[in-house]
Image 1 (cartoon, one colour):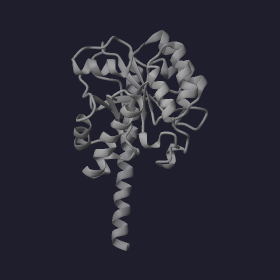
Image 2: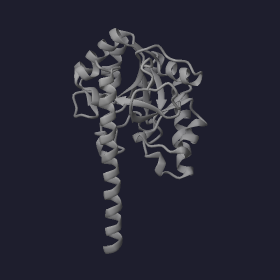
Image 3: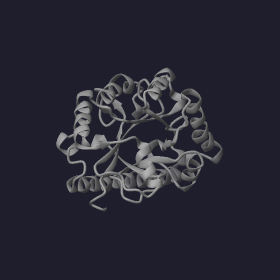
Image 4: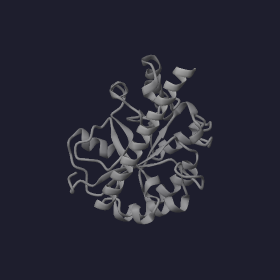
Length: 263
């Protein structure tokens, strides 16, 4: 990567005292935001996306903040800190769950999500609301007929409720392929993944990598955001994650084979 290109999209989920990796305690979050305010250029996600669409290099040490799943504690905990420091953020909302709980899978923890009243208030205060689909499914497992509303209808619902057309999408679980990318391209200017790395000079706006802050909970590691040390650390983390994924897939295929033989 060009050493003069220092830009990143950070990912948070719940700002609360719950278990990692989903939750970031408020004191830690506030400390991280204070450090970013003094040491980075925190911009709206739209600024970074526009750079890639127009082949412009963003300023050095540029950061965009994103929050997945629309947990209600964003309004109660994160938003006041961001307002106090004058920092921008994007919240990716699984829109059918607004005002409900995060019950799409066990890892979501059943925590309450933002209501439409809260979402409208946040939008009026400058928080960007993006789509995280309708129901948070793994999009690559859906048929074309199932995929279409997850992408298009979620956009319509956000625009109807907030009066703002959402420009950005976030792939649930980070899963996408060329088919889902094409479907997202028809409705959004950009989309975020879970690829664990800093941005590079020539990113695909429909497959933007992000850094989950769970991997930066150590204050020293967070403060190393744009260093060679962090790049190496993230590289090793990606290898470990990819290895676990391959082992999981292999074990799944083995179980299917055994069930086929003995079922």
